[in-house]
Length: 96
Image (cartoon, rainbow, N blue to C red; front, side, top):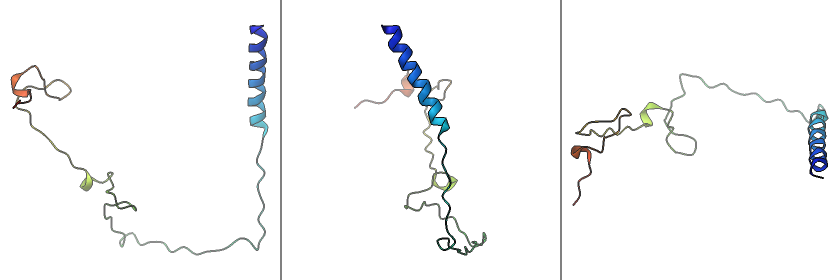
């Protein structure tokens, strides 16, 4: 019984994939009265100034001026990946 159910599900799956590829979209033709012609003015590249902000006002992190890097110097030894090695007293956090 299990073999029959699995075979039917497999057959239904194969038929589903073959029918999905057979469907084609037909292009919609537009009449001449519905098309509009517009002219677009090209921006002069010398006038465009990058403000470093996106359209929504947040800083654009792709630009170097918006990236902030905080480098904390650790007094003790470091691991191979650059993080502080917590086995040493100099790298352990100070308790109150």
